[in-house]
Length: 220
Image 1 (cartoon, helix red, strand yellow):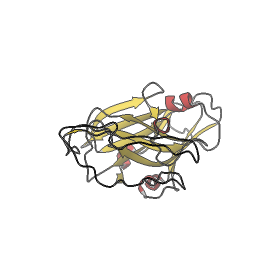
Image 2 (image 1 turned 180 degrees about the vertical axis):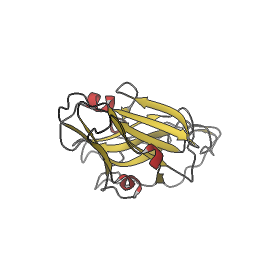
Image 3 (image 1 turned 90 degrees about the horizontal axis):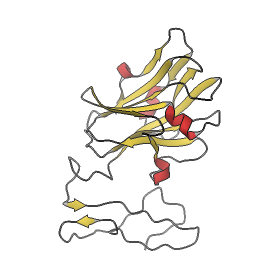
């Protein structure tokens, strides 16, 4: 992946205070470095970062978004979402653009945790209806922030687990993720086929624990 410089930077009122710092950190592969989007409060402007995947086209049904953090002030989630727009492109042509609390979701609430949640970290995105190979985040003034608007952008992400048809679909039927939740030290029982609707009689291979599982957890 690489940064599309044509769709990365600040726009708006000339002379307004704001910047896009270290945008290449968004595609560095590290989970700890980040780019910074910043804007002076009460100005008409926007700050954006756009990431292109030159090797893949993602089908409709993919979740597209960014992992971000609000480091310096306590911001209501609805106000943060109202200041963010996520836009997808395919071969340089805009596909979809969604912004606001009614259109974007914090994916941590669905259990789709990319880096983490809480402490001002959010995984914000939307379920796409069109294919794309580029995703852009744009920030405008955040409501109820009286001084300086600043958002840290750790990375862009795509999640194809909900794709039911298209380029990444190679198995007949519908195979959906299963989420089991329990208290600490309380076993929970589940089956990886619970939410699947296969065509025919598939054979399931060995299960594999994912890295996001909590320490000490085991699969039997």
